[in-house]
Image (tube, rainbow, N blue to C red; front, side, top):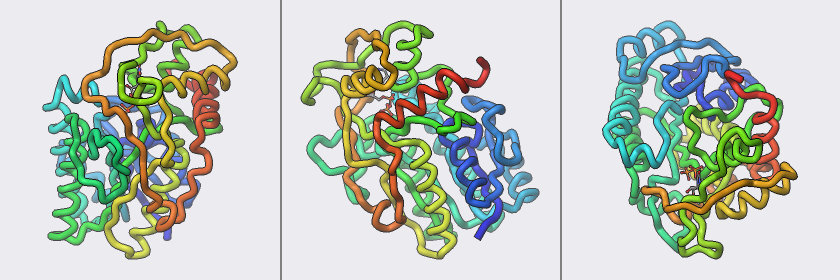
Length: 328
Ligand code: UDP
């Protein structure tokens, strides 16, 4: 089945890649984005409706004019560090904004909903396999705000038949191999783009946030997943809902963790250039280790994260870095 999908945050990093994948799969992605962190140039694969999640009238008008068969909800603030400094910003936009969206979807009888959640909802659980049944104990406001939206979806599923697929992302990286869209945050806070900027001299040396963690090399460990693999899972999640398989939670990670130092080493190998870095303090809110322990997306959705290796993720990010930035 094909149709129209309302993509909130479609002007952002992951949302724009999702729009490309949706269009390739025969859907019409309608981007709904307030451009607070996204880029109009990233909206290349379907119509654009500028709007804010908290603007219920605008949401209702967009549902009425496009009559989407499903929603993919990416729009959110997503920086762990910022969420610790400004929790209100995260609860207002991520939670209240999502509530308005969910209510608008139900009012418009659009009952298939795909939500981008995060492994940050699990919190810092050393030596625990983080599968979908792991108890959620977020340690930062970002993770807490995403968990709250998961609860909203569960309740609206029970009360209003809102079918939802929740994806809990591990660390999304890389970019479109054709560099039509890519990762570009302003300000940038993510490891790989910051590192590529440091390599090319666009900014100062990378600061490693903490070298005294209880990990083999003292730096934090993350499970990196290629953005194209990640958005492929969303298309499979949409089909899952269309097939009437009901609400489900899926982790999206590879089960392999890499430390910050290992990412630096891989970047040196991929770019053939030195990575200038300094060792700094821990960043408040950071978990020591986040590695997905689940095969559920692979076995149940038929997901195949073939591009999620560091060489390809850094290679694709590096190509975008050199050729594709918005606002050069
Ligand atoms: N990190 C770092 N220096 C930076 C940015 C990130 O050492 O300038 C580390 C961060 O502490 C974490 C990992 O890189 O262990 C990934 O951070 P990122 O912000 O990319 O994603 P997050 O895990 O916060 O979602």
